[in-house]
Length: 189
Image (cartoon, rainbow, N blue to C red; front, side, top):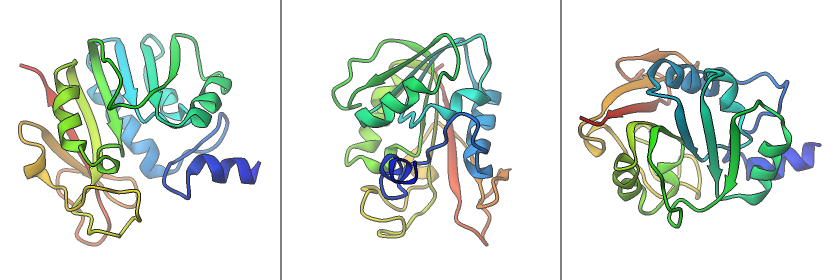
């Protein structure tokens, strides 16, 4: 199982939790925050990993999880998280998006050369967009998988911003003592 988990984690680039696993505080905090900010019942998650985030969301939603990695989608599908879910293998750059109430994209945008363009694309297909990105991450800090660096509030105008520190606490300001993730919430007018 260790080798399979390491493969799914993609060299520690993806958080992978299987059904019954404890979820680390920072990863759990993102989804608890999402649950507090969801709009509607039709939810799309881009970069869903093993689907573990669904356990923090309401039971009465219709959830579609998308990931570019076929093996992680196979893993998510076999976990049996709950009914009213669908996991889809797709590349966000090629995916024909439908309308959703809320779209979630946690730790995805920084992996794409065109990540900020994808944010604009996603905004057109939802009433609420919830994303997280590393806050002011210097190039090379988290490795070669990250294509966009030094992201801050100015990269996400018309979003509300909060932060998650290394211990998983959500705050209104970045913690100067730890590496922060920036939470961004967009609401269509």
